[in-house]
Length: 271
Image (cartoon, rainbow, N blue to C red; front, top):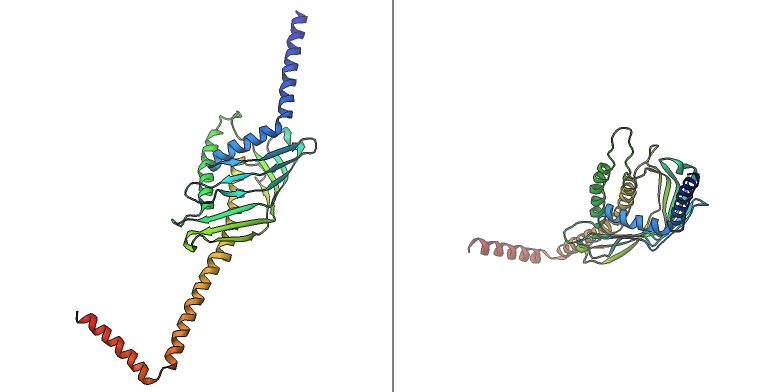
């Protein structure tokens, strides 16, 4: 009997050890798959990652080539391309929720802002998708008092996330789809998730909302408002030009212009 029990224990130990070995040796692929799967569900568009590298011993991780595709109705293939993402994890927090990520740095992010012929902005559409996905995530983690749902998203706290050396590529149908290149102002966010933490979907929604607001504000100031100012300047120059012509006219020429205008009005009323 003792031999049987020892044998079972040996099998259990081997099985657990094998599972841990598998997870540790496939952690990068598991994280990559999770980002693509849950990211695509949250944004309701394709999320892709080129490479993930996790170093548990150092509490560090790197994600390269993360892209978020545009929603339908837009010409640009992507809404975001986040270059390289570096993370620092608080290993001591992994014993219980909320898990703490000390710092995330996003290097060379690209934001693609597109305003289509229906005057819809791609980033706003993506933000709406995230907002509509959040209630579904909240419903999935509803649980009875004292119980922990196995399918519930873990809660996280991000101490700091920064976006550096970013660019914006913008185009608007109303401006003949001319493409513009802008610098994305540095963005520094702190203490996301508060003290109790937030789900990955909630954090992604908040981060993309702030990034979207910063990018669209820059596009409005540097492109939309600038183009409107150019049009106003041209219109004012044309008005000044016509005024100058009138001032240079002799009284006879002015009277001639007035008579022509009167004749046109008479023709209209006599039809």
